[in-house]
Length: 76
Image 1 (cartoon, one colour):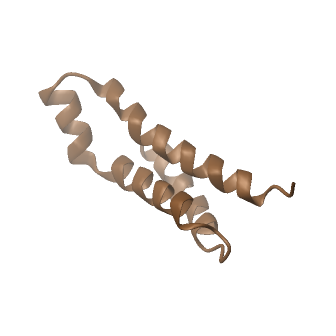
Image 2: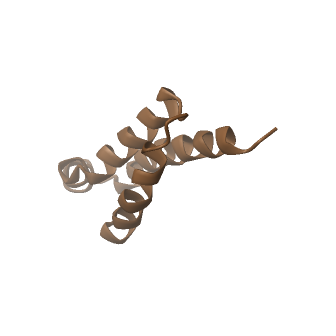
C-alpha cells in the first residue's frame, strides 16, 4: 500500500492546489487519501474482521474524486 500512497500524495497536491476545483471532488480526494493512510483501519479489517477486501471502498472514493476532477478539467 505504501507504493500506492506515495504517488497519490505527490500527485494529489496538484489536484488540491487548483483554484477552480469544486469542494466536492476536493473532499472526496482528501477523504479517500485519509482512509488509505489510516493504518489502524487496515489492521482492524484484516486482523479483527478478516475482510481486507473492504479497502476497495476508500480506493473507490479516491477514484471517484479524481474522476470528477478530470471531468471538470475537460472543456466541453
